[in-house]
Image (cartoon, rainbow, N blue to C red):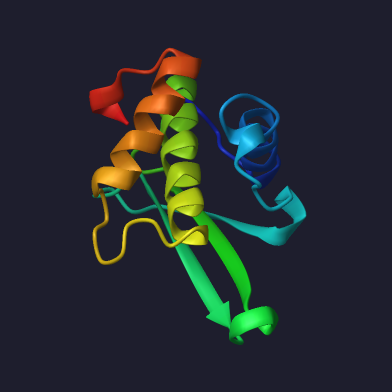
Length: 124
């Protein structure tokens, strides 16, 4: 493993994907509205969490994307993980996969991302 990941790289990867298809059509929050976290967890590549406050028109979401340097030692792994966590963000933001981490809605979004970015859909 040789990638020395930092938050600036996470923001840059997020912004790259946010500016490209299909993410640019999905109303993502700006990078400044997402908290990027680096972890050392060897058992997980990354994860997305959302904090919900308010209800109805006052509902606000705070997104957290965590990438583990314990599993993302190469650029291609890191980029695929970032794209994967961004699919979770879209899924959660739009309440598509209630109580299903990788449900049908997530898989449909992930296939779309894989198609546009040349990722193996099964690795998403």
